Amino acid sequence: MSQRRARPAPKQAMKSVWRRAVTPSQPPAPQPPEPASPPAKPDPSEVVSVVQAALYRDGVRVSTPATLADTYHELRDQPSGMAWIGLARPTEAELLSLAAEFDLHPLSVEDAMEAHQRPKLERYGDTLFVVLRAARYLDAPEEVDFGELHVFVGPDFVITVRHGAAPDLSAVRRRMEETPELLKLGPEAVLYAILDAVVDGYEPVVAGVQIDIDEIETEVFRGDPAVSRRIYELSREMVEFQRATRPLVGMLHGLMAGFSKYGTDEELQRYLRDVADHVTHTSERVDSFRQALTEILTVNATLVTQQQNAEMRALAEAGFEQNEEIKKISSWAAILFAPTLVGTVYGMNFRHMPELHWVLGYPFAIALMGVVCASLYVIFKRRDWL
Image (cartoon, rainbow, N blue to C red; front, side, top):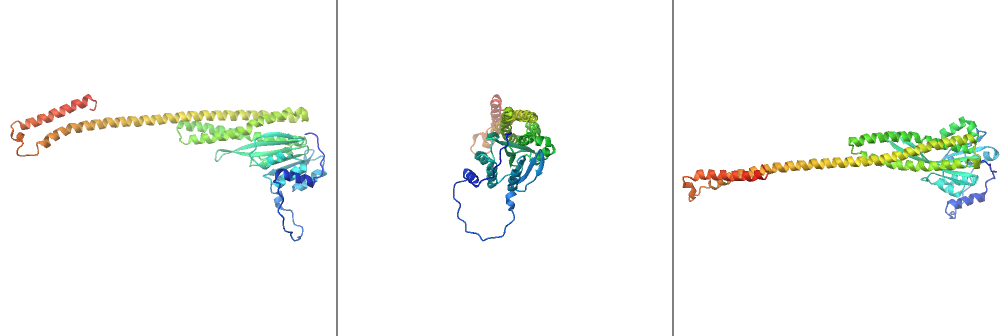
């Protein structure tokens, strides 16, 4: 990547090849001829997704073109310069224009058109294609927001295609312009700065997630019923975070393995090793977060089960006590029913009831009531109903 290639003028045939590589091969519908009109101003839509384009020479900005066409023209006029083009959700036409001008591989251009790519590092000739997953922590909803960044790095150009709000590449550009001794090292230095910005952006996320995990642990032992959902959502975010950081470790080691082959500057080698150390540390922290959330979820499930068992035990004990009370009430009701039955029978006052004129009739009725009540009391007592 240290050898600067000659910059041929773009050819119409090359553009047609790129269009056939990325778009369906269907002939355009014939359009009716339009009446001649005076030259119009440049279409503002041409620069909608161009965040910023700049040309640098020896680490100093020498030009800020307004359009991609101006960038191509000025870069051809300055063979010792470097172009740094920043795009945000570019159109297909813009990417095809960049591909034709800088000889980008069709597969990398196709990947750059679509987000949701895995982090990776691929080399196509003298051009590197890097996919990064940036992250930022949102304090208000307590969530992790992920962005995607595609970077093309060539001998004399750097093209960034951003899908999402993170990272803030304007800060990276300002930092590099404030250190021209680093910027003059070329496109590899810009790639280092972008990698460093993405990895540094992980630190606030790690700190925010650590606070969330501490809060979740408190909520778990406090018995908050909504904590299970929070654990699940944070676990999903950690899976995404793991997918963003784990491949980055191998990517940086791949870059370091090519230091001697591609003649990377020694100072830049030290910077990239520092970035590799940071991303390794971050990846280990993310792995520990995911393991901790798994353990917390297990503990929470155990506590919920224990709470449910305690509630079921309390319900069973309450039901048992209620049954005991019902037994006592039923036993006394049966005992009191016996004298009521005897008194009701002898209170019918039929004329031919023999006991009505019996001298011992009243004592007999009282004795009968007492014997029946005493018998029922003994029976219920033996059965532990009383």
